[in-house]
Length: 235
Ligand code: SF4
Ligand code: FES
Image 1 (cartoon, helix red, strand yellow):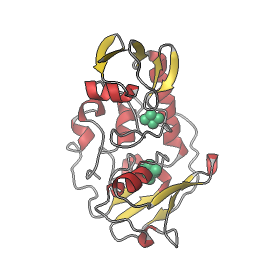
Image 2 (cartoon, helix red, strand yellow):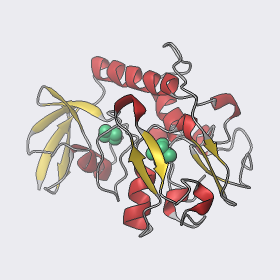
Image 3 (cartoon, rainbow, N blue to C red):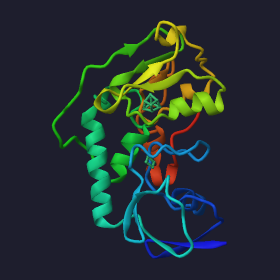
């Protein structure tokens, strides 16, 4: 058994483990968006940034070491996360007040956890398409943060390959792997994990909108460090 010191608190972990795996197992909340315990890490959102032995790293792709000192709640680390979150909110149009994921959205919950309640940066909002061709699922790419959770869920959990990422840099975008590029012509099924895993409400199952009243939605009841991640079956 090895020991990690997180904000002065010792937690035990069994190597090999990443910093976020060690924290997650010990019940220490470390903010994240593109990481889920049951998928290979992606390391793209950087919301899990911590300082480990004096160096800023993404906790989901950095191995925990015996005796390592991790700063998760230092002021400058939290400020960095807030900036990252603010950038996500203006990079795509999240239309939170009208979104059916409001109150059950991991991005919104992490933002509230850090006290980010309104956009502070200049809106970017490139026009992106909405695909409503599937009978059971809609995709609004305006909200996609390119976390690749749907890509990994489709491949690693559903045994399919419905999604991938096309383009590079500012042109990177989610691609539906079907002959027409439309979701309705893909292999996606409503029971697929990929249909339910999106942390931002870009992928939304139909006929479930606004069923939970305001005040009783997942993160209305508990903040994300208590409630845990939005997960399968909750969209
Ligand atoms: Fe991530 Fe959702 Fe975009 Fe898929 S659609 S890459 S799950 S944000
Ligand atoms: Fe670590 Fe996204 S959760 S980079």
